[in-house]
Structure formats: structure tokens, C-alpha cells
Length: 173
Figure 1 (cartoon, rainbow, N blue to C red):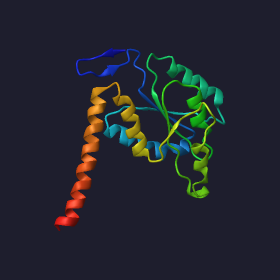
Figure 2 (cartoon, rainbow, N blue to C red):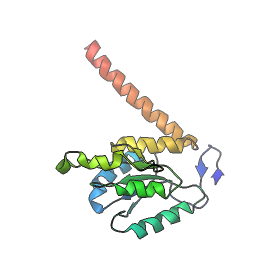
Figure 3 (tube, rainbow, N blue to C red):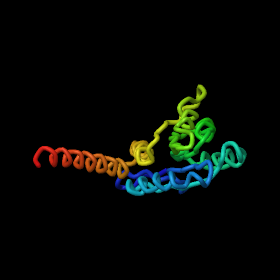
């Protein structure tokens, strides 16, 4: 790991800083929203598909490769219906895991319950909105990366300015 003149931390093994793990291709729409928000924050990501239910060995082998890096990535897991993915990933990595399951209209939100409670010793963070999952990821990365921290602050300031402009439009109109 090296730190450049701007205080940006880089991993000399060139491993991804954010890995989005999908339970299936059906989760791509939700993933696309996360990637768009990460891109807006200047945070690159890599996407993989590995169902915890159907290809557990593939998932564990994949995680082992990422965990071999000096600095592990932040993982964002996206799995609809039954979210074993977030728990299995969290139980097998040392980096943070953010569970961002898509809301399933078909199940009236009941599918989210598999993300709400995890066994002891398993602690993925649960963030339901894709843009918020991207922001949480950027905030985690910002702890050691000044450039990402600056983009997080700029994003928050822009949101504050929009809210204040909306209020002014109501009261000055």
C-alpha cells in the first residue's frame, strides 16, 4: 500500500476497492443504480455474481482471492428474496459488508426480513437505497483516502444546497 502526494491510498496489488456481489443476474437493475452513485462519487467498483445458495464454493473461492490483498475491499451485496449472500460474505471477510437488497413487490417487503436479522458474529450493514449504499461505501473509503473524503463532502454540500434552495423557493415565492 502506498500514499501519493494528495494523500490518496493505493493498493500496490491493484485490487478493487469496492466489490459488488450479486446473487443473480436478476439483481443487475439494483446494481446499476449503485454503480451510478459510486461513479458520481468517483469510486470504481467491480461486479461479480455468486449465489450463496447455488454456488457457495465459487463464492468462497472468490472471496478468498479478494481477501488475499493487503487491503480488502468494501463489499456491497445485492440479493433478492432470501439474503444468505450478505451473511455468508460477512462471515468470511475482514472488510466491511453493506447489504443492499432490492425490494420485492411480489413479497410485499417480507423478503427484506432475511437482511434485518443475522446470526451473532455476522454484521453486514443494511442500507436499502442504492445511492445511500454507495455513499456509505464512499464514507468508509474516505477514512483513508482524502480524495474520496473530499467528494463525500462535496456531495453532502450539494444536497444541503438543494434542500435550502427548495425551502427558499417556498418561502420567497
